[in-house]
Image 1 (tube, rainbow, N blue to C red):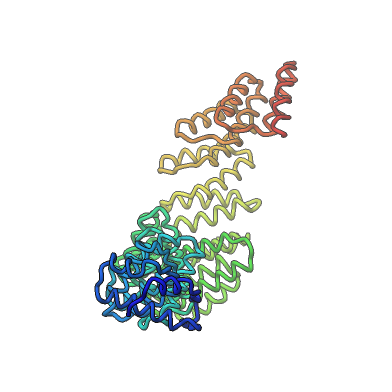
Image 2: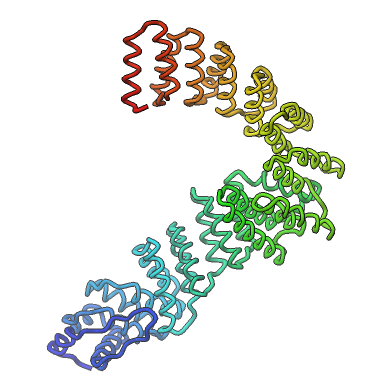
Length: 553
């Protein structure tokens, strides 16, 4: 078919209707002209004419979306796939045609249908590079799904390639968005595609997002294979959580069965523990309960698929109920489980101990600890921590708190910073800071690493008793350990020095504080002002008052 220049000029002014998602290819009154031009272009490319020759023939033709898409659809047969790709590149380079998402989608489907995966990947990379934000990613996903109706064949390979392309480009959030968008449209993403996303995330500095993707997989009934589990174990190692989570399994199944802990049990129990801890941080009770329901539902699914042993699954259900739901409800369920043959373990007992302590039911927690020993179960560090924190929070239980602390050391465990700080705080309130400091010395010999809060409490305790030397000793111990004393520490130090008449030393620490970009609070200024007034240093008093005013304190 031959076109003269006037015909082409006339045709270039034809308004072609643009294709939209969810619609069949349009036909209008000019469709015969469109078909003729599309057929002529296809014929030229099928004859393997050079780009220059094709450009001379169609040089005056103005391409638009409708015509480009018509040509690509005319060349959708696998035998014409390379021809379609040649036309796609010719139109972009010689006619400077800016391909839209839809023409990309059709071309990619044509190439995948013909098995030209490398070429399809190249187009997908170009498309992905131009569409990175969530809205654009959704548009690309929808376009690729809708294009299936025009190019016969399966959508799945194309969508999997899209996920893998975004992952390869390290656009992991976009890759995950594609997974979510595809599933929202009622289709599935292959496990290999999820693995590609997990692999890139695990090797990045956003390891925590690995667990969000893995949780999404399980909730969508995409269950892991050996490759998935290896990636997740690597993620646990990178986070430094593998040993902690294996220890949790030991407490459920017994250390003698440690060698039988499968990667699946380790990974999936780690997922549940993570979900429970995140849910525990939610303040709204209704939301916590919804998280509990979701966790229990997920655990039942894992049990059905034999992805966790029964003892692990049921223990984690109890743990989730205790941490996120009602303690009494968890107890009722636990009693039913025991009647059905469930064997209690240290992990479950510790969960209940923590639940009782949180609700202030310390006597029941203490009784539970004794019950563990009666069953031949050993309390571990977290068990003791719960009771220490619970006793320290209650009134009149300091002696019990100290007794549990001694029992913990006798069992070979070291308290957490949190539980030790609670005990130190209670001792300081009781004006027994010396015993608190002595206990710290004992723990330091066992490898305990105190934090700033520990030192702050001790300094505050000694400052309340006016023991300046002990205050400064602890301050310099913090400095020696490269800790950065905070506002509370400087407040205690300065107030103690002022009360003891060491105003010059107090000024020195105030200066040090400011040099470290710490802003003094009202308590410091009021203490300093009162001390200078007693000394008759009116000029300094005025200066400090002006500083307070400038800071709007």
